[in-house]
Length: 430
Image (cartoon, rainbow, N blue to C red; front, side, top):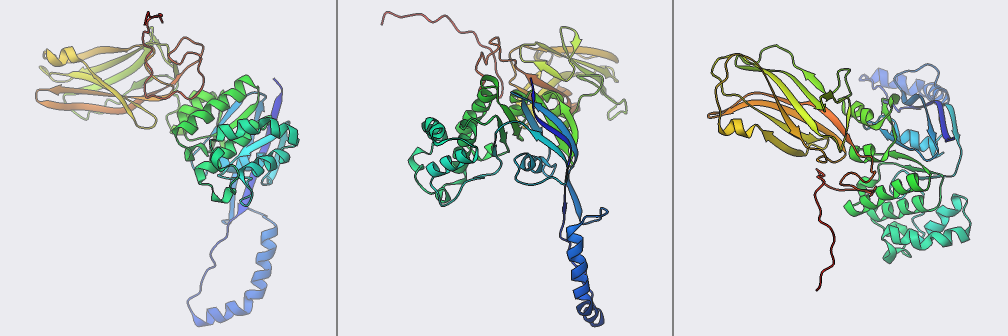
């Protein structure tokens, strides 16, 4: 597929306003008054040239390079101040780069901030026509899309009201609807979906999948919702301090962003043998599929075995293992303990032991999950060792009809996603 966006060594720098140094003596203040015309002239000249970097120069982007193919969904993630919005503003031709080259082939529609591109005095309907005209569409083309745009936005009651009276959520609804329906070859979406409610987010994510997969358009998507990034994006760009920290598959990109990137040994944690207790010590935790160690991601259809190796350092201890699983938002998905051993415990001698627990296939939803491991006893209740979030995996779903999602590619809610057994649909005699 041909490249529709090519960015080469893109950089953007700003000069920050610095507070003037104040003198404390009367003589110093008089001297400043005398020197101020010359200082102001020098300050004016400095604003027009950057020269060498100093404390007033801030690089929002530095040597950013990437390419996007037609029909691809590129995710862009990074912490606040990483340069995401600056990059999108340059691609949308809102601001100019300091250096570098950009090639864009196709009509671009952008939704960067609430109400971007709207004239506050014009009605919603008039803004639709204005945006369409800016995109190079004829009135007839806009007429053919008008009803669809208004219906999707959900603001039909207020479509002839000036936009200045819209709430932020209404502006986002209309803005997204206009950007997605006016046939752009390239759709640029910043983190505006967070303003919308649950139903709106669901519609927007479904629409983005539709325009990329079914209509072959290119989407650049900035979000802090990692489940949406892993589901929607075929490739992800991670920005850090204005530079490209990683670009590639979404599962590894999310881990880079969250600070849990894949290590060479995969879904495996080998713990330090520095003793925090003289009773037990977790040595190793591995997550496998059919005896093969997972790398950085797992398919939703795969069964998992969590294997725990631990050492008992004191004869006669009652030791029961357990796991906790969280998602990247911090939701506690479930806890599992060795129930049989909890109910019918028996003391363990000194030595190294192994135990495993199986998590069935078709259990998790897409996104990053974290595993915590604990060793404890219950009579009396004692936590010997608890290692939090020592392994992470990114769960993916191919949307091929074999999972609980089926072939539905839109927003699919739920913290877990079991594939349940449904009986055959039968006609009744009622």
